[in-house]
Image (cartoon, rainbow, N blue to C red):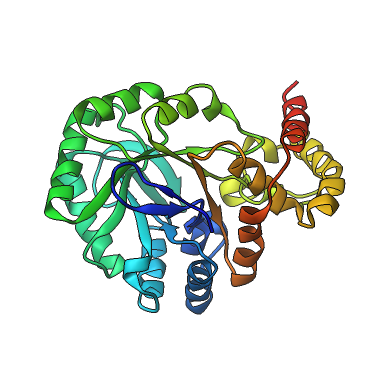
Length: 326
């Protein structure tokens, strides 16, 4: 697995990381997985060369972090880069965010909240430090906290040794400039797939200019780009309100994936591997997170790191995806 440098931290992260939202289970994913299945999935990722494991407290109210922590008991902690997040809470108030099941989530990036969150995350993960600590969603009114104050707390946690690198998810260009003005920013996480290329307009250029790693999440559009979803599929849970799962859109995506079949034969891989390989082909500073809920899925996803798409095929795939927006 190829690795790239993470800013000036001295760390190197694998071009593909394991996302553990689905491993967290809960209402968003129609229930929990068996604990051993979660452990086996995470351990398999490390075995095949993935060194970055991404999680968050907001993934089923801490359960994803608990599963990652259980897996870490079976791994060499020094060889695993653990990435978790702050800013989405359920045990204190903030600005309204999503409701999961019957529990309300809030956005809160105040320093006091961050100091509480990191200690709870460390406890759930069973570790004394987090390698990458990332703001999950950015602060909004009515519980708005300036980035300077949020970053002040993060820099303090770095001085304490509780975190090693600072990241930010779901940001715009102005957010990034604020982070850079008041401290540092090593990695930015944004939604990026062949179907959702909005980050290319502004985030990709500013990250490249400032040596910030761009980490793509949902590169498979929550499973839609696996080729296993049929035209009659009815989305539920976290998929229910997503653009490409809506009737009229889903059918066109399925047709596009069928057009990929000759490329699958050319590169000796499956549809999800092609989708991941396309994202990886977008630049040396781009990494991705690929979710998996079994060791077999991890083995299938990791093949994308070895697929080298030609420039012509990358452009052809982009053209097919862009035609869906017309």
